[in-house]
Length: 240
Image 1 (cartoon, rainbow, N blue to C red):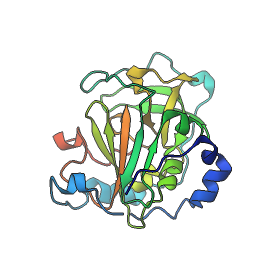
Image 2: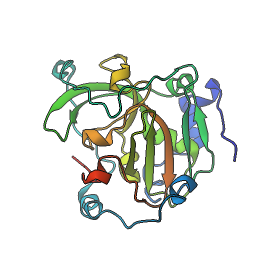
Image 3: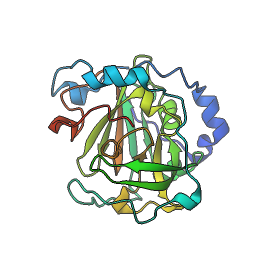
Image 4: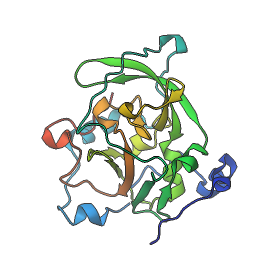
């Protein structure tokens, strides 16, 4: 299936709502895996920690946010995986594929034409530090809705320009405070913090919040490749 490209006028809020008919609960069941991952390994059962944590996770409940006076501009530590990748913003495309009715290839101009959401939240690192940051971007569930995922989708895989990879449960992906961010503290997102696009959410630990995101693949199951740090022994669900 060919990737679909959108012109800017098609991605207004009114157009988005018309296309998606979004319902916060309609996507909380899951879709099928991508050939890329299926060709490499067989399927696995759910991680044990997901079985426990999803019982207490409330997928549509907002996390309390902070006042602008609480922002900590210098507190967000830059952690890199394989160094900072070089990305040509003019050629950049976000690919959304997998088990969807309408695969997408979106430029940054098209993404920034979608409704901007801003939130001030605490970023928590598994290493023991935290930072209150204002993130601005597009709600991930709005982009997911445009791709029209199939009814059995349960997970999303994220690929990054530096080779980093992650996977999330679909309920966390569709949480109203899960963003694809392109702003930090009211300014364009610095490349060292993940520009042009990174995940930002108050419901996951920092290692789940991929930087330099280039591809989102929706799937019905997990494989042996669950996430860079998870494959080295870190917790998969990593909820806060």
